[in-house]
Length: 182
Image (tube, rainbow, N blue to C red; front, side, top):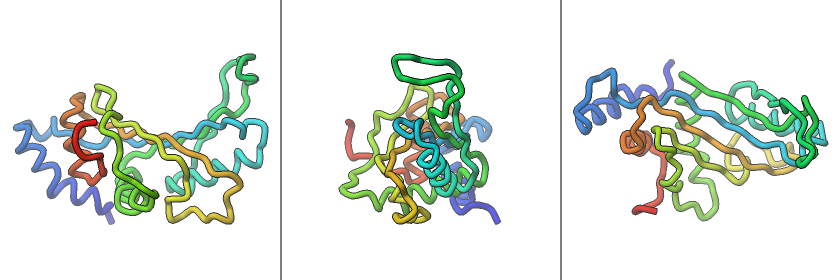
C-alpha cells in the first residue's frame, strides 16, 4: 500500500502545480529526499547517550540512523579523528512521504506555542531547512526511554531549483508556514 501523502500528491498536488506554473509533467516539483540530522555535542564523550540518540532518531524516521564520525582531529573543539560527531538518516520514496505526512499532521501540531515554520528556511535552490528543539513531539518517542532531550535539523530536498515552486509544493503538502512574509 502506497503512502497516503504520495497518493494525494499524484491525484491533487501535482495537477495543481502543473496548472499554476504551466509546466511539463516531468518538470513539476516533487519531494526528492528528507534528511534528519543531529549534532552530538556533549554526547561525543558518552556512548550510552549517543546510542540513545541514534535509537530515538531511528524510531522517529522508521529507518536505521547512521552515526557520523569525524574525519580529522580538531583541537579547538576537542574532537579526535574517528569519534562520533553526529547522527543522520536520509529518507527517500515511501518512507519519506510517510515521515513528511507524520511530521505535518501529527508532530508539528504537538509543539507548544507553534505558530508555523519560518519561510526563510529556503536555500535558493528549492530546498527547505528547519530545526526542532526536542524529539518528544513525535508519538513514537516515550519520555521514560529518553536520557536527554535533543533537537534535530530536518532538510527537505525537492526536484526544483525555484524556491517559489518549492514553497508552493510544501504548502500544498501541508507544511505549516508562518503567516505573511517574515
